[in-house]
Length: 378
Image (cartoon, one colour):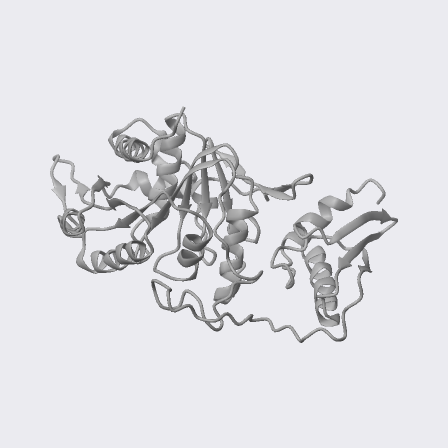
């Protein structure tokens, strides 16, 4: 057993355990020290401070042992508690920090009781080395938002830009499938920052890379907010021209966390032409405008189905994207047809924009338009 690297066992296990004091993973909080292997036993120190209650210490150690077992380690685990002893006079810390609601919140619910993310209040921070951050959003699910986000990211990479793709949909991550990435992200030991996984010239980060594909994320809002912040601020996005963020549908915790954590260069709203999708897209437009995020425009997906005779069948209606763009004085950036090749490319992890066909050209034109609106200085 001496030839087993203890760090390779501990890193994925500790990355999945959140420290309730710092809000970071136990691995990024540097709580794992002096790992070593002795015969069939993995030894390491768990470094705590006075803010960790006895219950915290026990829960973290048990979670680490369970994760190690789940990852295939069948040996013994000896975790030695180190660091400062818990302060018996410290006030009882709750799992849900209470934050006073701000009367200046542009939309209700951005703060207030129960709204604090794990790790404390979110602070607006610049992401070192990132020139433009673009949110791809939709008012409802099923309109192809992740398809647009992944093809936009790959299209920008094809044009020679340095691109990152962050999957902020904690409950239903799609980026691992659509970008054909599955390896677990590593952590740069000197900086303790997560290193994204790369494919098709795009660096990717997703909750789907940290958990098993069939594992449900049964999390409340504060945990989601903490994870989104960690993906943004604890991941190495340096030397990135465009960071494309694939948001979950709707106007909830992930969207508000993103807007409070980083300065967005702009947002794209994805919709289909049908009235029910347009109604939800309008809510997304309203959210971004209330929060002073520039609206780059709309992308109308599934605009028509091309028939063999060259005509078009407007399966989901016609003209909804253009009418909405005109109403809100913004631009209809692209109209993407409903085609089997787009769906097949997403399922196979080969975005259609990688090809040489009219649909690929439509996504490349979208990438060109976004790059023109948000130029990168040489």
